[in-house]
Image (cartoon, rainbow, N blue to C red; front, side, top):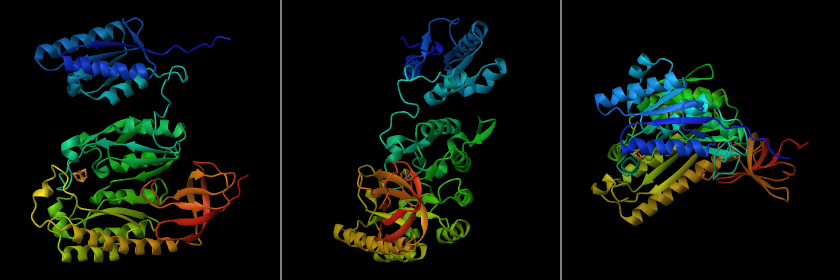
Length: 446
Ligand code: SF4
């Protein structure tokens, strides 16, 4: 029997301007084609028309506005993108019926607008890529990138020179991607960026329509909306700005995981200043206490650099004492490395390699002791665990809400027959070591 394929929506494209705009048009069409859309050579057959505009000169703007007018007259369902997208008000004033306006290089936004205006019927034959995209992680957890680049200039880091300043994704596009990932089997979303707390700054924290309301391009609002989707939501790379306090109640409510990955990198004010770390003036110890008062189960993960140029024994001891007070749950440490191009390389006071090694060993010893005590306190409790691997002998390995994949500890289970990868189950914790927990399912698989 012949399979009746649903017909995919057709997209018309009017491409104006320079070769760069033409390449943008090609990229947009390539993405739409791989999403299953067909191209329409004329206005009549198109379900939606894209006008890629040029705004370089006044004459080019007039030509762009005329092209938008023609597309509206001939088809009526028009999305505007390209250089003139920066002047969205001018376009909307003249053509209020335009469906969406996006700026230059905003490929994801314009493709998202086409998906909204002419949704693709669900069909494995039309959508060549699975709903959740192609993934390198197991099906049950996914990384969700919310921005690219960074506005800071930490002395040991070359990311801003490689990736540029902060560019945030639209919150509705992130949420749509999150929904698709969850529909495709994701049970845990790992929010990543270079600086999650800065999310939306470049968008001036503007709002976009979402599910009959609005969502602001802001970490708190995004975290709240992600939390409503029903998967575990874990925040990585958050800097201790004052407004980070606003996400702690979301953790206490159970909307997002009680887990904060905050790369403090050091504690000595002198070293932090030399590192040019963001939010280094925040009163962190006091705030950790407040966070724990609001959300007693919160897990704080952090990383530290030892042997940064100019770090004295006194600075390092300050860090060790600070860790005694901070009682962080998870700590990663790195020996300072002079990455080519980093401004820190020019700082005086290079720390000899053997001193770095010695400090590294001391910080690891200290944090292992803290971690072991924290994990020991969980013995006898029943906690939720997401299963990463279930073996044929009835054993399984998973993670609690306190454990991000690859970087934190694991929970090793016995008698886990009948459960599957991605299941989230209550586990009675029977034992602990420095990094991992050991337990048994506290419910029988029916
Ligand atoms: S370390 Fe992080 S915050 Fe600092 S410049 Fe690099 S990416 Fe930005």
